[in-house]
Amino acid sequence: MAKRKSNASQTNAAEVRKQNAASASGGQFGTEFASETDAQEVRQQNQQSEARKKKNS
Image (cartoon, rainbow, N blue to C red; front, top):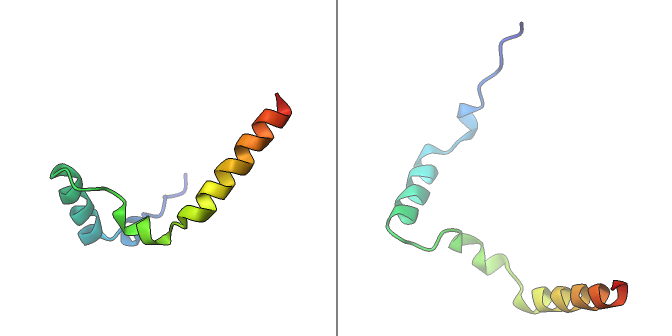
């Protein structure tokens, strides 16, 4: 049986600790992605999705 290679080196321990601390203290998890979200585009995609749902039903 072949030995499995560990992926531990791919984990940023400091980043994990920071996220855990923010989560434990009631911080907003995932806020670092907020600036990457285009609200207008999301609304448009939701609208298109709703239109497809109505068309298919």
